[in-house]
Image 1 (cartoon, rainbow, N blue to C red):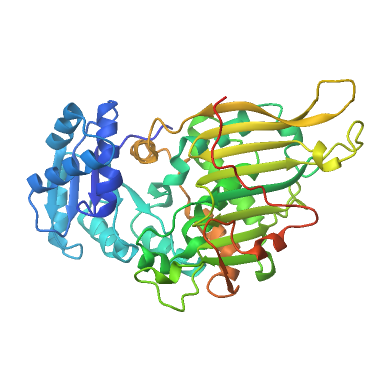
Image 2: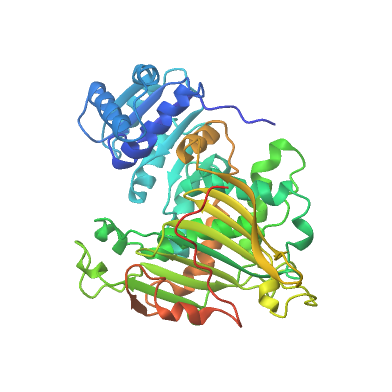
Length: 466
């Protein structure tokens, strides 16, 4: 049965940074594309009037994405504002009146996780949670225990199928393309398993540092910030089984069921297969103590214990102050069983390469013959797909999906817990931090977690146009 669309959009934290940088631009884009025609109600503790919120929205759009006069006029006309304490029943009574005839609201909690409990309880007590959906932002906990606690808090007021845990990374066009490419092409499935794949690497590199957010980064570090969520989710999309959904309306949970299965098959990490690094200069950042042990770089070797992937090493690497900014997946295939033409077996290997950002690039590595009499080959890349980035922002895509009850690109509670189970054993200082120089690929020790003859593939600074 197709889910009914939401008929009001409520966002808590309306005067905050997330609303300013992401939510207002997404709302304007949805209105511009004809995808949003319902009441929009901002809620925050700031003692503002609605005109001040409209001014805030205008300033947001001028700095983030561009102001569209017609779309903004429609956004401003729909916009309402409620000023109130999140722990005061009167705030939710006012919200109930502002919603008018709406009976299926979507509530966006763009607020710190510490406020989730009073807000969800206030929504439930006032009746605003009845037949409603709720969006919550990552982080979904700091470890397995806190993630389980957060899920219990949310479930007190909302059923699991009404909870949309938003990870903007899953809304990227490139990540969706990865899922589509895997399951829309017949030629991949016969080689997409341990008999043909030698190793898988996922690199998320950032050329910049913490950009003045040292105090924030001290609370997360690279593993909590991107590995546990973004990178394990990409890994799940790469390795999950074909979702057998039984029909178009069951697709959301079919995909998430398969992600849960493969995450549950991932072996919990052990310190011997983890390297943590910190770039020299990080401790000079404001808000960072001089003896900080927080990692700005992490390299991991993971294993999936199931019939498809047993024995295949998976390598994940993420860090700041690296030589390039990009996210790339390299899937290396095993060499031919008998090297007919070239003596170098490693030179014979084929691969699939997916660049997920900043551009979207899908290439196939192959060997072709060099012109001449000798049967000598050279490495060649066949470009399967190339385009310069997203046409729709992740927040526009994800808000639209949530309004229509499509949860396929959102993270389910049991999947969040399964991902935390993988990284939980190596959180904190279970692995010492090693220093590394900016503009390098992390500490030298990162090479030591590679199995056998495996080597890191370092993404090139930029791609040539096809």
